[in-house]
Length: 105
Image (tube, rainbow, N blue to C red; front, top):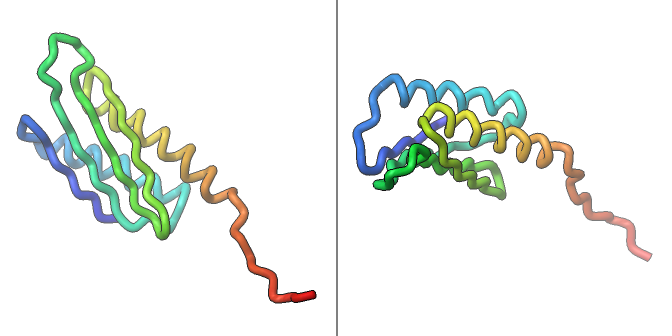
């Protein structure tokens, strides 16, 4: 899966980029038709400890999932966002597909 990562207001190191890539690659265990993912890492200029924000847009055929999380560290936020995406992907996979009927009355 192709992962595009953008860091806003700071420079992300290779360790953080590798972590996000490996964590998002694990989502393919839950849904195998993932096209790509866009990850936005942001640092809010506030005095709060939870100032690290992660926005993930996951692109699948005919749909896009967006998850936003704010935590104390980027690793924690990425992990939390991926857990939410896992639940959404499992729900999407279990949803029955519409099969148009060819029978007419």
